[in-house]
Amino acid sequence: MKMLINVPESVVADALRGIAAAHPELTVDVENRVVVRRDAPVADKVGLVSGGGSGHEPLHNGFVGRGMLDAACPGAVFTSPVPDQMTRAAAAVDSGKGVLFVVKNYTGDVLNFDMAAELAEDEGIQVGKVLVQDDVAVTDSEFTAGRRGTGATLFVEKVAGALADEGAPLERVEAIARQVADSSRSFGVALAPCTTPSKGSPTFDLPPGELELGIGIHGESGRERRPMMTSGEIADFALDAVLTDLEPDGPVLVLVNGMGATPLLELYGFCAEVRRVLDERRVPVARTLVGNYVTSLDMAGASVTLCRADEEILRLYDAPVNTPALRWGC
Amino acid sequence: MTDLTDELDAGTVFRWLTAAAASVEREADLLTELDSAIGDADHGSNLQRGFAAVVTALGKESPSAPGAVLILAGRQLVSSVGGASGPLYGTLLRRTGKALGDADRVTGSQLAEAMRIGVDAVAQLGGAALGDKTMLDALYPGVEALAAGGPHPYGAARTAADEGALATVPMRARKGRASYLGERSIGHKDPGATSSALLFTALAGAVADE
Image 1 (cartoon, each protein chain N blue to C red):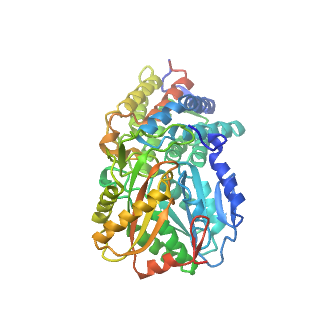
Image 2: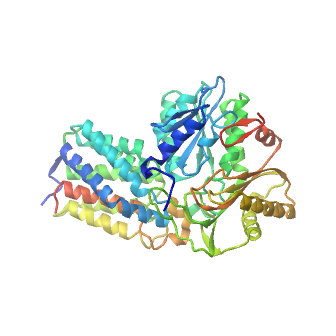
């Protein structure tokens, strides 16, 4: 397996050094693995902190900046960060108005953020938490660790970040984050598995003529495997799962997200099919975002996320944002 | 022959954790391979990083009480592993250490009792139970066998933990990343139960209960 790396052990640190080189507006602590906007803590503003395993870039480091996250904590590849990183980040961004942790629902992320919240509160930092759990591919949550957090993370961070930017108190920022999380659903498919640097070979076996339906973002397999389908058939299947669960009665935000190795040519083609299905189902589309935002290393495939958007969510979504991976309005 | 009335000191626990680190190092590829079947292919490298940090910390600062050694090691795991394994293994060692208190020497029975408290804390933190295809499926049988005593308590604990790990093969996962596979998790040995069994092998080696 050929990769553009030095050694597997240093991939995260090397990437952080690169982020520091490319983005002087961010403070990058390579040793402790914390990325913070340079002007933090921003006076009279709730701090937003997220984090998770590396390998999902630009999530989360690429979403640090005005109007979105104040800090991100990257873990090892596909492994949640440790509490020390999160408390360090919280301390760096707390202006006295408290900090919101945006947590994706994976056992490791939940446990480590819970520990970090306790530690930060011991240090006198007020902490709120929102759990992102949008993956409809996981149905029987009685018998699993619950729905995974995937593409909705972007919507949660964007909308809550905008409200924090307006100076809203922690309770309101936490409430809007929860509203967006609860209003979002996702479904993902893999066309080819991914390869982690430490393992050096594909993390699961997927024959060329087949696709995996209902994948998460860690190279873990989905729940069902089928012969390869067309882009249109995949859109029908994915949106059927999402819409059955979400039942939108008004406009939605749409994220057509690449898993890392699928070119934009294909993602835009898939986006056209997603739009066709939503038009057929008479679901009004308020905004559409297409690109590689919540990835899984070099996995080929895509996910689609819908979020029910009321007027406030739409206003906050449209608000200016200036981060390495998401930038508009400024 | 070692029995449960024999006393263990900080040196025994130090040897136990050093042996665990060596065995994690040796079996890292196997753990990652098992994890790639039903998880996300990082269990071996994560534990390797954590136990290396434990050995480094114990080399710098070596507490004189068995409980304190375990607490220090547990804190290192939480601070260096990440994922679910960091908090879960960290909690196992920290809570076991806390239950031992600050005695300079403890009996095997006291260790078994403390480990049971540690394992219960892991179950509570992870919200998992026996039979969910997790590390608990090796930890509980191991601790029970140790507490039961007998002529070779530590060897019996090792065997019970190994058998417990093997028994996860036909189980359907209900917790952790493997749970998303549903029926497809059946037929694979759980990586967490496999690494937990290594802890008992290391313990048996450290007290020379062969």
